[in-house]
Length: 341
Image (cartoon, rainbow, N blue to C red; front, side):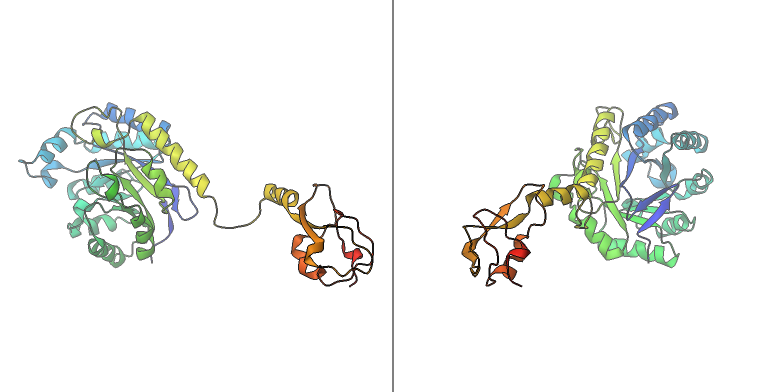
């Protein structure tokens, strides 16, 4: 069985932990190491827990006649460049990891990533998945191009290799993703179906959806980040800028606060409030000694907070049919000593 909480780098994620917020830098650095470091710093300042890159050798992953090949060729960062960014991210207290291909996997491993990301575009590459899993690091699995039967096959590889530390993210690979295809309900279903940490990789252009996902049980949230969302190409147009990402983090943390606890126990403030608002038993009219109490003789009133030793309205049935042993004026409390046991 997978773990419902596990360590990702130096950070615990999952049950009992705050949402783990990943800033997906991807290739929005456009191949510029210094620009990427500026992005990493901004992610840290915006409240991200981790940054993720995409480290895919274009010659291994894309045919030269595709647009993807051209974009990834321009933005590819090699071992030394990626290592520089990893070290910088770690110095800021961020977890850092990447999506890798076979050619880059071995040197990414040397950079000591917090874990690995496997995107749904790689689900058919069983050999790469197995090689990644065998590194023994935690994995975050995104499901934007997959149905449950596809996820089942990847999870089977995890199980075969005894991987227990992984999270599965609900995702829909439309750019941008319209509201009707976000499917936040899948977050809870994934958690139940696979017994895992679940979350959301969000491809919408809004900042509120990740916060809403908290109510669906999301424990990991991934969102694209850009310093300038107006820049052409790459993933800038489906990303949040610094202010948007910062607002998103605030909304997520507030949503977590609002979710609170499933335990319905009284906090001290409510204990005091309850005493001030509880209903107690009073006489509705003057009652004389020997009177047998009926419901018409009783009022259930909120009393002043300093009132002591009053009978709660819940004691009503214990009074009805009992004989009054002391005269009681109207609007006076009826106490145990006023009735015959």
